[in-house]
Image (tube, rainbow, N blue to C red; front, side, top):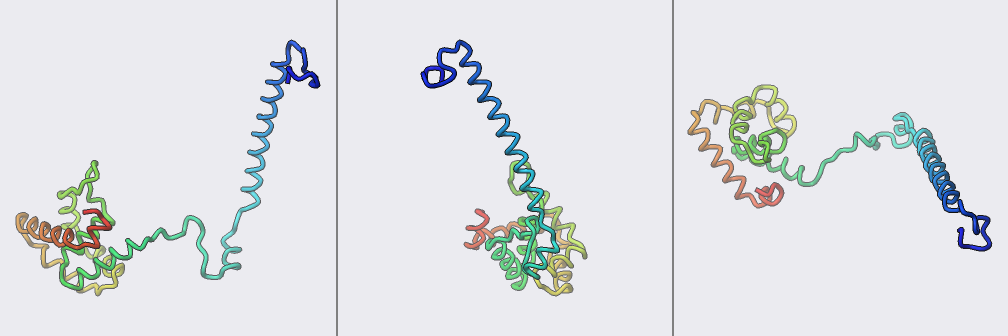
Length: 179
């Protein structure tokens, strides 16, 4: 601007400082104005659950309620149901533990000790949850614990290894979980 003869800053010795001051003031005002505009947008766009219900009846979710359910979750839950129906009870419980319980160590590797603890601590509340989640009969889930509940450590570990082999040989699970 100070090199342009048509400018008011032409040949002014403080032109650079004046131009910088104007630029800084403009940026500051634009910043403050954009923040106020953002506040106005947020305050004016508050959506009540009642208005969502009036607009969409049953088919609405707020942003925090949107289900994050993928097709792979559905496939794995069907696999758990399949294994349980085919009497591979321990395999079904292990797969459920891998998906929904903390059976990993700090390096994100499967921790056999945590998995054993998870399987040994299955109780009636878990059986209710498991039967409800996978659409199974509660008594069958409860009775399935007999197949491994009283095993000694060596036999229990052998059954866990057999279940892992079953999971590793399942192409769908191998692809989704990268086992």
